[in-house]
Image (cartoon, rainbow, N blue to C red; front, top):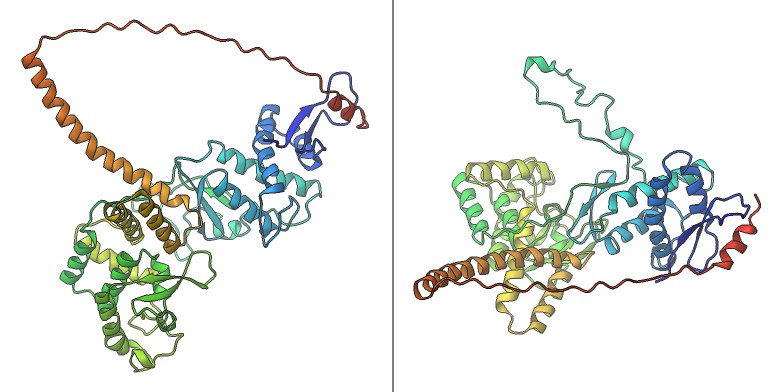
Length: 450
């Protein structure tokens, strides 16, 4: 497939460029050419060439495959367009997972991710730094986290209310001097691996622990939502009375999705038992703390479903505090987000166990992808990969038991014998290649004024 590429100035040809980057039409691509000549005076030649090798496929992709607001993205586009293009490239071409964080986006590598993700992010960030320095890009660097300076204190670990004790005192937690970066896209891990929760009784263990601890009805309903819907805890806490009324099915609620900017673009589905508990909570416990003492049917659409004991919208930090108490006392170390992983793993297991044909499996997998509203359909493939690994482990253990039994029977009934195999003779083939003269390249460089 055609792509961008670079070529050195042929020997004996005078040109102001010692190297030129060409697009797929063999026309000079000056931005990358200028980037090379700027960087080669700052870092080693080999490093700059490595940058070019990872940037050239990106700019080819940008030219033909990028998409932002119904149009292609150009390298000198506005920062938001460039960010979206880089995000798409990381997901589609480098097989990464992207997770939004405060002021930046976390990049998670998967088993399919390119080994040059870090190199690409460094190269594209450096490219825009160069373009800004050369005044060829007049806007803010799209690959920089603009809130970075505000989010990092001048002295790590410094607190406004009291100074840290000296480390010799032994009363402070050691400081973490993890490397910090101002990059907008930050690699979070070596490889993104979904949590495969194989404990099918996990929800019931949590429910039992909650009952033992005397949890509020509100927290029981929220926890059931987590395990039954697969929704993120933030999406559950943002639910309103109107979200329930928007759906025609009495067991469904409209919900936001990450990146939907509060728009209700998906639905979540609960069991009849959880619906009964939800109505009971709204008509009893919630009324006790709400400013308006009305029942479910009379509440305005904009009213949040879940309230704190102060009558304010229930927050994640408040829920997490209660959740941690319950799970800790139950001896279970579990982050709320793992309920989402449990849901996907359970659904995947159900799909394989309840489907009779491969076509049914594929159809149900598509339904699950649509329900979860994953941006990247390959997310399910990652779960499947690890789910299949677990199934293989079970099969492997059974096979090993069978092998051991057969081995014992073999030695009882037959004499040990050795089999000598004649090694294969491999024939080596030499591939010869010849370089063709590229007259067009010589002519091109000769046309560049020294």
